[in-house]
Length: 53
Image (tube, rainbow, N blue to C red):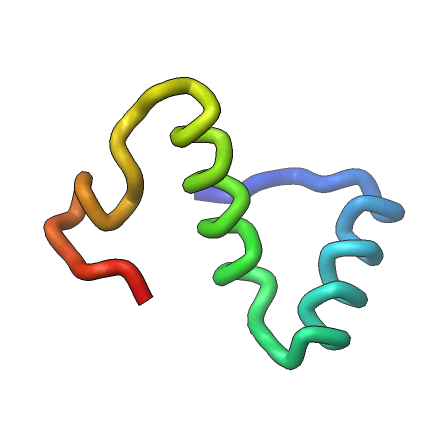
């Protein structure tokens, strides 16, 4: 799956990942988990039967 981000959004996400010394992918998964929680849906860990980190 590909996600298109406007260049300023991509740049900000990249900068945040760099500042936190993490990967953009992890930040995107964190964002999805927050969205799922807001909407009352199951977390990624619940959907995949993996313990949260």
